[in-house]
Length: 114
Length: 113
Image (cartoon, rainbow over all chains, first blue to last red; front, side, top):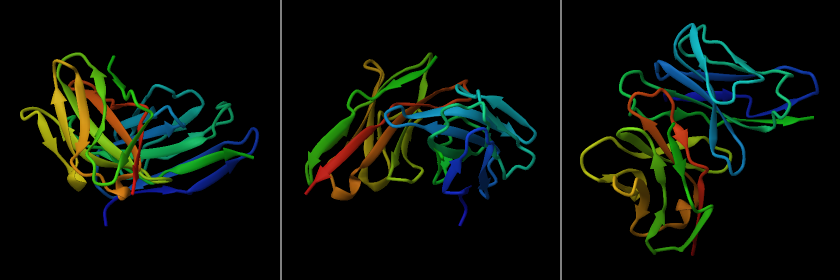
């Protein structure tokens, strides 16, 4: 089955630690996205990538970094500079082309502070 | 910049009754509009989208949505609610030249038997 796999499902971060969230897709999609979900705030865009080796900041990129070395992979690193990292993180992907293509989502990673 | 408003934090409806989840949007030009559903601790699932043409869009699981350009609204509807429809619903908008999808804050739908 084609889809998006996010791992781990739950992650705990210690003070001053960087952590990396994995996102892999086998849909052959060109574009990939990272969102942060907080209760009552909807989804906010962290970073997105429309093509391999290229990515752009979203609305809340500070304290996060990404890479896009392979089409199927778009890992997100939550750095120690992100002072409030506790949230549900969602990865999504979409085909290239028209902007009305729906985004497909993984099942998320819940990150908490130890 | 585009924006989406979902004016109700929660909608309660009895099983078998019709349901409506409201969404209004702001975007320059003609929009692409989407509805997604989220079950607890899961990702979002696509329900339906409006691109152009017919103002009534039909989607998955018996849901439909009505696009109203003059009121800049895209309300989600279902003629007969099921308990299993209870979930968090998100409306989203994308302008035709943009790279970003902007989401509303979400509406919790509770269907009681």
